[in-house]
Image 1: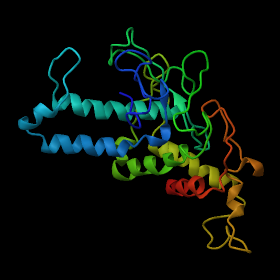
Image 2 (image 1 turned 120 degrees about the vertical axis):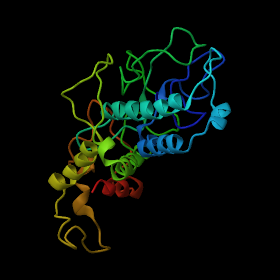
Image 3 (image 1 turned 180 degrees about the horizontal axis):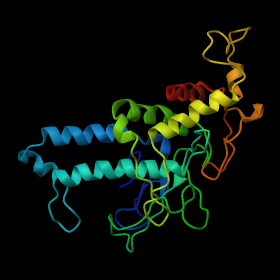
Length: 259
C-alpha cells in the first residue's frame, strides 16, 4: 500500500479509465510520508473498533466486504512501503527527493489492487527514467517538499521507537534484503552525522555555531549547502541539484529534529 498526499496527487492511481488520476501518474512525495500517523490510526482502530462500524469500511472492487483487519493491514503496509521508497529516494546525508516515481501498473486501468513493487524504479517513473512533479517543486532534488521528511520520521522514532527501528527492506523485485538496515533511526543518524562531520563548529559548545553580525549560523551551513562543499546531497536517490539551499528556514529547521 502506497500513501498519497491527497485526491489530486498521483500515488498509484492509473493514467486512464474511470480511476484516472487528476495529477501526475505514479508521482509520490517522500516528504509527506507520516509513519507515526498511520501507526496511531492503526492502534486506535484496534482498540476502539466495534462491529457497528463495519458499514463504514469500503468494499473490494468485487463487492466483497472488508474488515478492520484489512484496514490495519493497509496502515502497516503503507508504513513498510513508505520506508522502502524513502530508502531509494534519499542520500547518505539524509537529503531526500521532493518527488519520485512509484510506477507499478496493473494489467488494466480498471484495477486498483494488484501485485507489484512500487519502488522498482524509484526515484524515476518507470524503466525509462521518467520524471514528475505534482506541486511545481523540482523532481529528484532536496527542496521544500522534501524538507518535511526529518520531523515526520523523527515523530515515528519518538512515538514508536521499537517498530520504527525494525523496518523490513525489500529489493526491486520484492524480495527481502535481510542484510540491509534502514529505518527511522538510521535515517535520522544520517542527518546528525552530516552535521557532526561537515559543520565548521561544535554544536555542543554553546555559542560556537553562531557568529556576529546577526548571530549567523553560517558555520553549520557547510553540512548541507553545496556552495560550501557539502557532500552527499546529490546521489542516485536524489539525482538533481536543488535550486534552493539550506539557508531557507524551511530546509534548515526540520533537520534539527534529527537530534
